[in-house]
Amino acid sequence: MPLSRSLSMTSLSGVLPAWEEEELPVEDLLLFEVSWEVTNKVGGIYTVLQTKAKITVDEWGENYYMMGPYYEHNFKTQVEACEPPNPAVRKAMDALIHNGCQVHFGRWLIEGSPFVILFDGDLWETCQIGLPHNDREANDSLILGSLVAWFFKELIDQLGDEPNVIGHFHEWQADFYNNLGKFNVDKEAGERHIYHRCCLERAAVHCAHVFTTVSQITAVEAIHMLHRKPDVVTPNGLNVKKFSAMHEFQNLHSTSKACIQEFIRGHFYGHLDFNLDKTLFFFIAGRYEFTNKGADIFLESLLRLNYLLRLHKNDMTVVVFFIMPAKTNNFNVESLKGQAVRKQLWDTAHSVKEKFGNRLYDALLKGHIPDMNSILDRDDFTIMKRAIYATQRHTLPPVTTHNMIDDATDPILSNVRRIGLFNSRNDRVKIIFHPEFLSSTSPLLPMDYEDFVRGCNLGVFPSYYEPWGYTPGECTVMGIPSVTTNLSGFGCFMEEHVSDPAAYGVYILDRRFRSAEESCNQLTQFMFSFCQQSLRQRIIQRNRTERLSDLLDWRYLGRFYVHARHLALNRAFPDKFKMDPMAPLKTEGFRYPRPSSQPGESRN
Image (tube, rainbow, N blue to C red):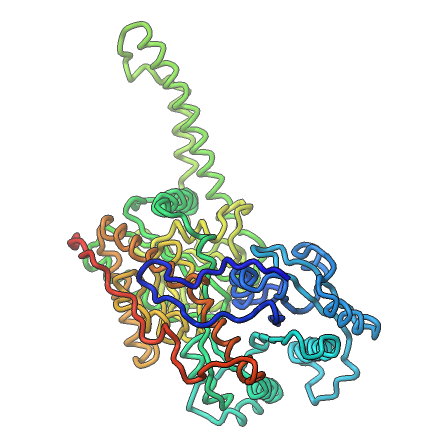
């Protein structure tokens, strides 16, 4: 069948290396990509699948299918049901359906509209493989895996020898991660009652024709825990076109920053004694994994940053957002009151301004300049005084925007109490914990995550463990500098492929070879140096940061997946698919050059 072929494997910007590997005869192949997060958002794999779908569909057309679990709500809201175009796929589905399984087919309503096959079956009683009955994640994985294997068996029976099938399996959703080299993996897994998970993951790795990991840091881990070196490292990319704003991204930064400033005016009413034009917005976002995501070292570094800003009498203020979902009882009253007070002041100012403007206009029409003391009457002054009195506050601005269910033991709030950053007037670092994902429909901070990121000055992600880390990558393609680490896949990728990451606004914190104290001091210095930059320097740096977008685009990183599929076909069908498995990738050794322009002068 004819296929759409718009996938470009040429150099994106004249800097990135071209791709020269022989194209696969996709018209004679079927590609199935299997993951627990197909139409089912759990973690970062969902973003991988969603952003990579377009280039994969462009390359494979109707010969590409995604497979995952069926959830009724997800299917109704994300999938358009349709019939499979391939008769063999239809017959394989029917074989499972006639045996009591539910199999659903449709197009996932994301860019590229890939076909999806979603499975729902109850094999609880028949799968006697020694899994603990109370480990729901492991049992769900086994059920999905069994159904997928069953489907493939039926499909191959229908197809015979043509066309050949490629199965691409993403990581099992119940990951097993440990500190490397410090203990016996099997012993520790047994003591933590997850030995069955470790065995399942290890078995899956050794059964695969080609084993890939998302980054070099997970490759090192896989060798130690799974006893197999990855054949190909497949870095995570982004659909950069979605974030692309061309020359407008600086304007979008200003627009989104103005929205954040409006929120700050309400949140800090009565204590707004700092200049918003000299205020920087930092943020950390992601799953609430206090240590893994580096929130612990971030808070300690903020205490030291506050000390340095006060010691050097720096006129910059830093407002730091923690966007991490936690259990709450909705917004707290003080946060909502702050936005109400701000709105009341805004309405009052506009009412008085309108009266002032009308009286000034009338006076000018009559040919004279009015007495400014008489242009506003006593009622106007009364209204303004009442509005000012409403901003009086006898408590500090709240650290958190919501009522926390377990305030006393919450890790972030407990550490805020330890370091004593309570948003007092003397502090140059202010903290706002927003324990909920952002939404444009919120009555408190009505912004989507993407708009919020564009309005910030620096994303800080000092993760202690991160297989890849999409948050700094999203910052990069939107032209926002960020801090990452050499224990994250993204940080390792940038160290390998960019000659001077810091010059491009990607600060790589050393958490692998330094002590926690040294890493904390390094992060403090990163942030303090950032605060010392002039406005011009920050604009130049944002331009440089956005320049790295091509390096993170699936149009470039998709080539690693192409190589992995070609290698799998070569190993499964060596007579039909020839390649040199030892030939290095064209991207090995490539490093994005240093920026040609020189940085501006320091303002201090």
